[in-house]
Amino acid sequence: MAEREISSPAEMEGRRCPFNYSLDELQDVAYRLSRDIIEMTTRAGSGHPSSSLSAIDVMTALYFGGIMCHNPEEPDWPDRDRFILSKGHGCPALYAVLAEAGYFDPALLETLRDLESPLEGHPNKRVLPGVEASTGSLGQGLSIGLGHALAGKVDDRPYQVYVMIGDGESDEGQVWEAAMAAAKYQVDNLTAILDYNKFQQSGPVREVMPTLEPLTDKWTAFGWDVREIDGHDMEKVVQALHDIRSIEEQPQLIIAHTLKGRGLSVFEANEVNRKHGVPLTEEEAAEALEELHEKKFVSAYAEAHFEPAITPENRHGEI
Amino acid sequence: MDIGKSIGLAYGLPIRNAFGETLREIGGENPNLVVLDGDVGNSTRTNYFRDEYPERFFNFGIAESNLVGVASGMAASGKDVLAASFACFLLCNAYDQIRMSIAFPRENVKLVGSHSGISIGEDGPSQMGIEDIALASSLPNFTVVAPADEPSMRAATRAILEHDGPVYLRSGRPRVPIVYEDGMDLELGKANELRDGGDVTIVAYGLMVAASLEAAAELSEEGIEARVLDMHTVKPLDTDAIEAAARETGAVVTAEEHVFNGGLGGEVARVVGERYPVPMGFVGIDNTYAESGEPQELLEKYGLMPSDIKDAVNRALTRK
Image (cartoon, rainbow over all chains, first blue to last red; front, side, top):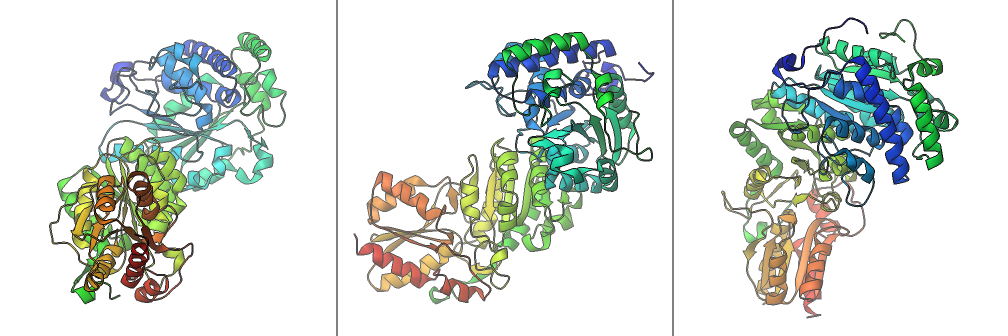
């Protein structure tokens, strides 16, 4: 792992930050949580495993990589860092992360989407500790995150707000309203992460909305600090999340190039939308878990699949 | 506009001004209050707050969806949040955001929509909030308040900011008749009886309260005594007051500056029909958009005058 300094858990701006795993530990956690995602959605018989798998490495880095200060024993701790999953359909990833951190009994993962389970089909903050925003109607999370960030500024609190948005979600006008306003108010305590897995419900992003690109140019023009990374390369993810903390008076966007389905063959075989919103059958799940065990880390696959509209001039992160 | 003048009602400030002045007062009492604007602060009168407390005032431009989402996030982080725009732009443009970011998670956000009804006049239908009560009322967890005049708007502004939970407060543009004393009491969810009578009850909110009082005075001259209820809280309804009105007066008429569908009338009818069925009448906007014109001309053309309320009363009484 590249040299970098992370404040020790007790030292991050006076806050208790218990999760500061090593790179090896992070990769192991991401592997186990990927298993959880496949298992819980296959058991439920519905859900969005591929949209969850694309996000799991970044979310693992956030919650366990010495990035976010949070405390499962006090989910409403006012100084906690906040994570909002704006692409709410990826919530199996969020549930897996929150269970791993200890926000609730991991046995609940087996109740995903069941009647009266707090693990609803899309996140409901009123029923599950650790969920910061009820999402599922796309486009809204960045505005909510901006609200948290502004409240932090008004009250002079040390927290950072992270919002994960989707590429398809970025079709929503509200995302750009929020981007514009965040830059106006210079909220450096707001970080957006674009889970750029290249597919939305009815097809590839480049077919559904080819003019979504150039994303880096757009966000830069809106006044944001923008960098691009391989969203499955744990080291690069942690490094980028660490680096952006030094940005002042500017919100930051990390474009995480990811694979919808984390490179697993069963998803890659679907050329339309990488099985958007379709769980694996038990047979497919068994094969996927086997493949996952063999590969574990998919950053090499992610690189091979990149077709980024990135130019050398606007590239901040290394690919 | 001449509603209420024949019975000696004076015209006060526009209720939006009363709202803005009260908000500024509360800003001095509650340092946790933040106010969010959709670039219409000089219309909604949140600019009174802005001038005193600029560090707690945020203008998000003409972008209601983001306005509502930010309100949600600030409330979730513990701020007392009030966001204001025109009734139609706030409710209609940002409806899914109000639903998903405020109503569903029960965030403690106060939404204020000015320029409600057709009495805004010349600016025309694109600016008239005539569906706002229906939209706000259909959202679970929401409280919906529509004050009648300057004193009750002052009281309502205080009451909603003391209430824990999402609220929609309906504000308005024109000067309207004063029906209350200064310093009146307003308890959310409890109707105010402004006039008693034994023959019929008129239930109204907003400008139609004054119109109902004028109608009641004219009916009295014809020997019909009407009770008038100000149903300033449209949701949750004061169902006990409605049931008592049906039992004690035997007929109920509703009046509102809003479309019929999803408005006060249907909700009052639901209570009357379930608890104590009596003949009813309804005054409101009948499935149409209005047009540009002077407020008085519009109220006459679209059937929102005291004479329209009297007609509805007389029709209901023939079925008693």
